[in-house]
Structure formats: C-alpha cells, structure tokens
Amino acid sequence: MAEVRAGVDALDRELLALLGRRMRFMDAAARIMDDLGQVRDEARKAEVIANVVASAAINGVPPNLARDLYETLVEASIAYELRQFTTLARGQ
Ligand SMILES: C=C(O[C@@H]1C=C(C(=O)O)C=C[C@H]1O)C(=O)O
Image (cartoon, rainbow, N blue to C red):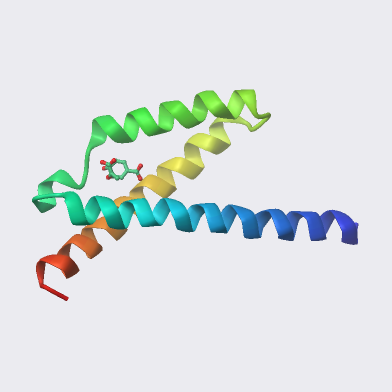
C-alpha cells in the first residue's frame, strides 16, 4: 500500500506542475484581454469541457469526473483571470 500511495503522491506532484503551467496561460490571457467582459467566454468553456470529456473516455477516466473537475477548474480559472486582469489594470 505504501508503494501505491507513493505513486499517487508523485503523480499528484506532476498534476500540480501541469496545473501551474495551465495557470500561466491564464496569466497570459489576462495580459492579452482588452476588457473585463472578454474574460468569461461560455462558448470556449463548453469547448474545453467537451474536449476533456472526449479525452477522458480514451484515458480510462470516468467522463463525469472529468466534467466535474473541469467545471470547477474553468470557473476557478475565470475568477483567477478576473483578479489578474484587475490587478494589471490598476498598474500593479
Ligand atoms: C483562458 C480563457 O478564459 C477563460 C478560461 C477558460 C479556461 O480555463 O480554459 C475558458 C474560457 C474562458 O472564459 C479563454 O477564453 O480561453
């Protein structure tokens, strides 16, 4: 069991490294956007979620898990991007 858990912990570190890379794209998006109203894009959100649901099936991940995770992730990313945009707009 210890070996399995060590594998899970190592994999979680990799996932977090990838998640950090994803967040850097949110930083880039916040820099590129011209106004706050552009941050939330529901059509793009739907596309991202459809993409991961399709990938989930190929990778042995329950599609509902992928959907729920990405619903949370994209909403958190939008909130993060809004904060970053506001900070940049204030010149900080
Ligand atoms: C990064 C973007 O901004 C938001 C963040 C998204 C994401 O986390 O994938 C998707 C839609 C956007 O509302 C984008 O528009 O692509």
